Length: 91
Image (cartoon, rainbow, N blue to C red; front, top):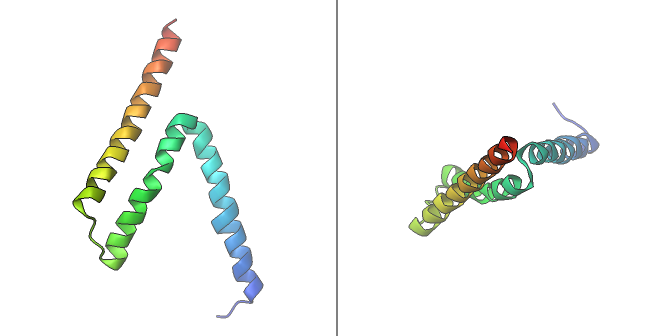
């Protein structure tokens, strides 16, 4: 099956750009700005995992340690926000 070139461009514009932007905005609002900024750092982790899975590029120990630190940072920020909400609700 062959599609015209403008169908592929339209798909890229709607699915890859507009939908991703919309879902990213909704997710950032639900997470809050602080957590969303740290979750954005996980893009690097997924890039390393995809390179590992698709290209066979094994992450180095430094990359693995960095990934663990990023995940720990995301968790710490999330716990801090939950504690702040609980403290604010208690007052």
